[in-house]
Length: 141
Image 1 (cartoon, rainbow, N blue to C red):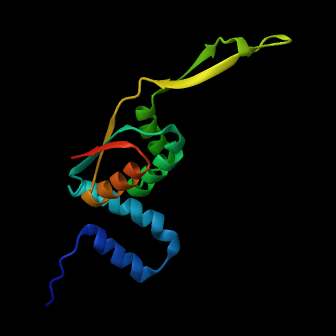
Image 2 (cartoon, rainbow, N blue to C red):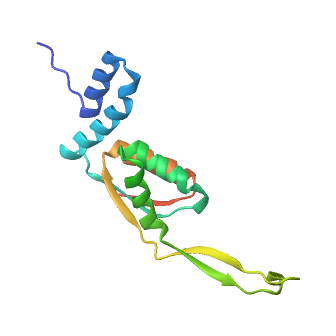
């Protein structure tokens, strides 16, 4: 008898390679993450403190790819860090055109707070590397 020592992720990857069905990749990734969390392999945390607003979509893509979440879950999680959108009216002499008052609004975000998630150490490390490369403030634990 041969004993093989594998992680849950490795076992599911082997099953997926044997089936060779590309349509099952998304289901496979979500299954891996769900089993790791249920089995207690999700003992590492990642906390996102801030991120450049121009990378918001990329941050959501990274979270989805590594956590197996849908678009709504990842978007909601990122919006906690981003905060609430607030528009303020900007009063400057340049805002008054020849036809009267020209209104110009400035948008910024207020009330953002760090958000934490738990996953396997591999998923957390992958996310942390990618997020830090974009200039995000991230801590892991």
